[in-house]
Length: 102
Image 1 (cartoon, rainbow, N blue to C red):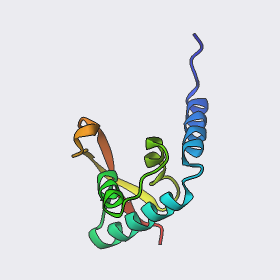
Image 2 (tube, one colour; image 1 turned 60 degrees about the vertical axis):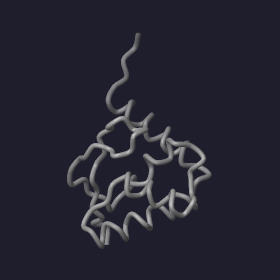
Image 3 (tube, rainbow, N blue to C red; image 1 turned 30 degrees about the horizontal axis):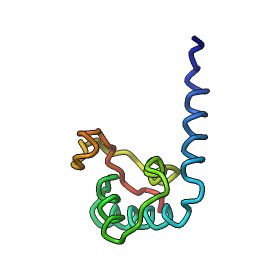
Image 4 (cartoon, rainbow, N blue to C red; image 1 turned 135 degrees about the vertical axis):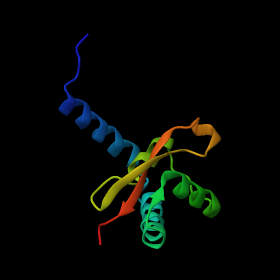
């Protein structure tokens, strides 16, 4: 079995995130806009916060893998970690983000 190098693994991860995000431009724009606004108001935001907002406004991505792209890109700083409050996530650890992009 051939083991991937770290660089190759990260490149494949990025490619997979790009594929998952394709066709979800409007969804990602709405979620990022909300995440930025919430971070500016409260000082931080989590994926759980964004998921609750999506449910309230009735938006869902075409794939659950799209959620990983919401905080992708410049302007986000990880300021901590927390366990997801969503039962379906089985206590998955999420990052706590702060918008520093402007």
